[in-house]
Length: 324
Image (cartoon, rainbow, N blue to C red; front, side, top):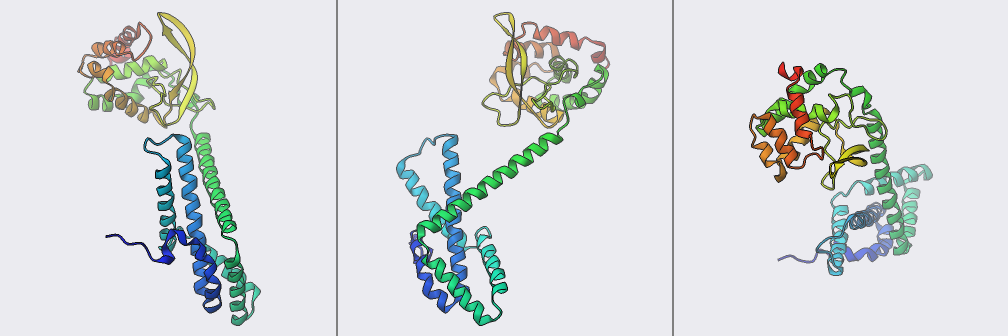
């Protein structure tokens, strides 16, 4: 049977921080450690609160209620205390090192240092709990913002180092086929279809690699199959103008497409896209019949172009595919 943790480890015992005044006079080093751990536990608790509030902003939980939130807050507070006592995230040790370094520069003797520790801890112990929590909340908020900024800077750096769409253009159908044929073979073996059909579709979607989809900053999206970024896609995307057929009439529209880090990822996601959709079941059962594969894709609604399958057949009969 579970028991209530000892008083000094119980989440509701933040008010015991004021009791450190006496301990500071008797054992300054131990009191300093307790103060640092208490502050770290409050800091961790504020981090958890910030993360939960961020999660609520993204979307509501089906089982969310006032009672659930209350128990979550209790659990977070207790977990914060336990984490701080068991080593935490290193904040308490950093506080101790920083303070001790500062004190070593202010006091020339151990006795003076001990008096300084006691005075410092007495002042901390006298602080209002609301103020301590406010300091911890501010520190945790700034910490989360700094982490988010670092992630944003890293993402920007990665994007800036990404190759441009112009740099991945293929100069000729020969180059297109030569470079992408191994990828088509690998994915076709996984799907159990003709690799020529897959490569022909990529050739149609990109104009033999001469018209790749580019991101707004001009970086390559590596999207070879024109797969759009709907609500199922959580990765990067490229928003561009596209030609769609509505009731047999071609119209220019702006749409978001999936973006990858390489052509290999594009092929892999294409395989996953087909194999996880019931719409393309017939296409995957076409076996080595490339024309049947293309016709089944069109029937399943892969593209709005009424001549989509016919165009793939024309590419399949081209001289570049006859060599394969």
